[in-house]
Image (tube, rainbow, N blue to C red; front, side):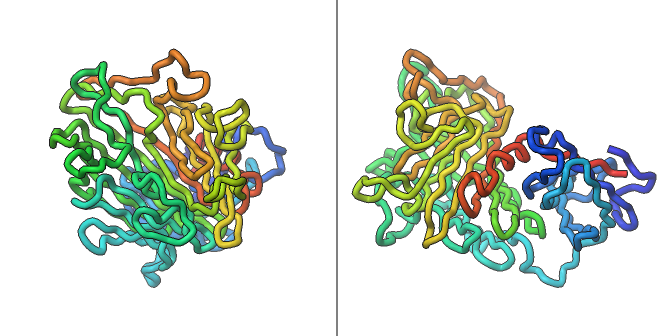
Length: 418
């Protein structure tokens, strides 16, 4: 980056030349083709105030920018041709419309609401009666819910199985801390007797943030066995982007800390550091198990949730997409695994009945996994981060340019500041 002589902290009167380079999308497309819109991260040459919003006056009109807790600038980048530059003149973002952008509000203990331009987007649930925290409902760009309501709410026509599948959540089905040769605690399933339940306990909401580009929830979570033994801790961050008329994005970051001893994430298909249960209408099969209108695809061109060759279930892939009808309109949900995550590209526990989970350590239960063991032992005092992106989009994977969206995520556009 090229730094100006004036410090960027005031950001007044400083001209920024942002040039999205060909590297942002892997130079596989024609030179005159524009990449998809999405979050663009800028590392300023001088420190700027964290968690602050700015306005960029560009030839295309005003564009919002916002800093995260690390002082990185983010904006929602519109489609820009390779090598094309735009001059932005920053100024403080006006506060005359407090509902614009993403607002994150804790309305009571155990419930945080997330709205986009004043309209409901999702809610973060936790509390003594919950076995794990989760996001629900999740409203897509057409205004309709895109994840299943059961078991939080009974809705006619929904599939009512697997009550531990709660909209968007994180879990692992075999965590071992003492005898590593035997199955351990199960944070995936729901026990019949609450006394036998292993739980994720939200100890503290570290931070919430609202702004014109994104909102954020940061939570401290302890993974606690049924005996009351804390096995490890987690800092979970949800970043909710305002998006545009066609897309809603959620970045999920799980940072696990193994401060109390060695912990094994054992190889099991019943797991997903990021897990979703999509709306029943999007499933590949109907309630009576006939072919439905949903369609699963992945980054390797495979389709379907079965375990036959050419299907997506249990296969390694950079991303998977689940597309289907929601209240008469075609909606898709794509999940991206970040390069650098353990086990990348991961296996996908993705089913025709609507389960959609990223499994970074599963091998033995999946196709071609016989005799393999993906278990991973974390040593005491280790830390491990996992990063994912959820893209909720109009249309199918091809229309939404999911493959290009993944390239945008895997290799974020660079910005030159002159």
